[in-house]
Image (tube, rainbow, N blue to C red):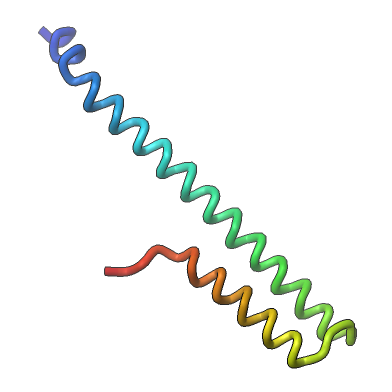
Length: 77
């Protein structure tokens, strides 16, 4: 009887497994993107401190990076 249940429910469980795998991959990609943006922010700050860029340029680039980071966060309902 369990074999018949498995056969009948396979399409639903298969779709659920695929959806979970896609969700995991998306979460990992977002985490990687967030980490890359944080590294860029650190590098940007070092450029400011060493005088490679001006403060207005730093502010503009920092805002763009923070906006990208904010867009990665899931929207709260």
